[in-house]
Length: 386
Image (cartoon, rainbow, N blue to C red; front, top):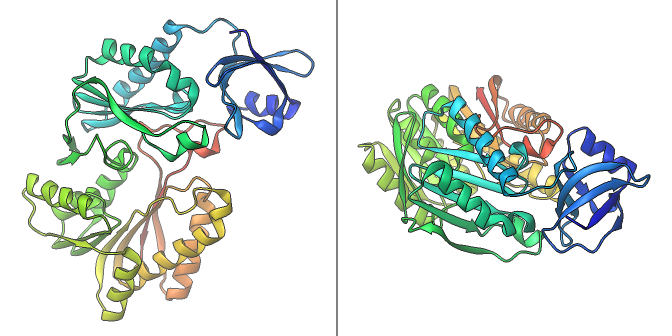
């Protein structure tokens, strides 16, 4: 490490308080660093702040790694992978699919590692982690002896860092799908081309909890490959699972077959249109499960996202039977939980439905949030009774 960066007093204070992303506006001087270099970060007075990854294309010029100034080598990264794995083993998730490394929360900026049975999926979202992939793959093979490791470096986040999108095996021969066990159900995760790394692992605990509360007729909206529907079906009369992706629905039908479930109907439709049609037709459901994609990917998207969240939850409340369950989620980090609760209260008032909050939930325990980094508390799942 030879390059350095000088950070403002405000940027240094935010890092001291736990926020590891240094905005470019907080950089006062930059040394001759290449993308992905580890740079020494100092204050304008020359006091050492720590070390971080340099990322010249990003609005976050430095992603901090450590407060320490000691050299960082391969052993450093192996130790952080070992610590991340040790935490997951203590949590002992009741599933074959879980997150092994959760970026900054595990001291591994820009790195995602998900485990699906004997297979791993890796995402490197910043240049520093991109350059470290050979080291990380060796470490993961040493720690877990996986049958394969798939590199799913195909996220929009990479473009913001000046990195190309790519998807390719990093070790072994990854299968198209992996069967995963999760709290009594099984599903097929598409590790090569499915959403996220193959499944929405952060909702694992919420799926099981919401499914346990479902009864009667259930609507699973934005169902993807039927993740919520699978948990609800065994306790319900029928489940209508709706998504706009024909490929995801085809995998959902296969997931239902694998579990021996015959009471799930998979419907290809735009969810907003489905809700309007169901409302006009007077259809009523005893549970509505809402898990939309991120509607506010940027802070500038918030006004439009608020309107969309209001509309979809209003429509959901209108088709909910008396005493019914609404499990509604948002994975938009810019939309805080208080904002979501405010939207839900407004929708309930417009629907003229008294609604009470049963539970306020977040991401599964293997997706820990970093205190000091609000962006890591991105998933909200609210269970309501009308």
